[in-house]
Length: 214
Figure 1 (tube, rainbow, N blue to C red):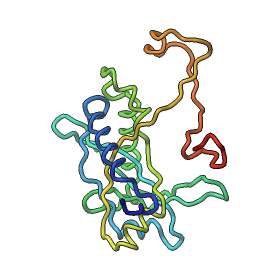
Figure 2: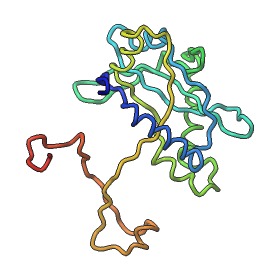
Figure 3: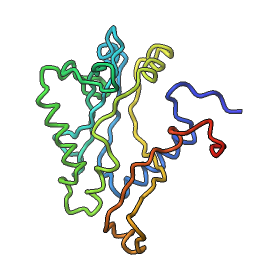
């Protein structure tokens, strides 16, 4: 019997699949060098503060290339709940670069912004524009991640770890693609015509009381 998962923990089989998918994308849409991205406990405590604010991680690109390839990097800021909704706003400082030893960039926020903008040019396909797969990146790779309180509390407080490694995986899900009328298969494959998808997936959007949700 498998052990009970902790809150926000990914099942091992799913984690392996995410890594497999990511490795496949390295042959298609992902051509960046990925160094170790580390979040240190001291950085986490400074960002979380007394109110246990959430941590947002922005993806960015280094200014210098490595063996002709762009190099991924990441910056972390503190995010606080804005009002009573689900909107989290960033504090401009402190901001840390997540290297093997975290570096405080609070006095050089323009360098952070420039680095983030380089990544977004890569993500939009502006960098490597001649690559047919480049335009697809914006649908796979996000700009940033808003981490939950629970996963970092588990790692740094409950487990008393001194650092956490930020790695990446690609999830896959079967989505609906709804066409007005009946489309020829060729039109579906070349992406011509209108396509809609606003479906809520089950899980998580399920009716647990429904006789059909068995």
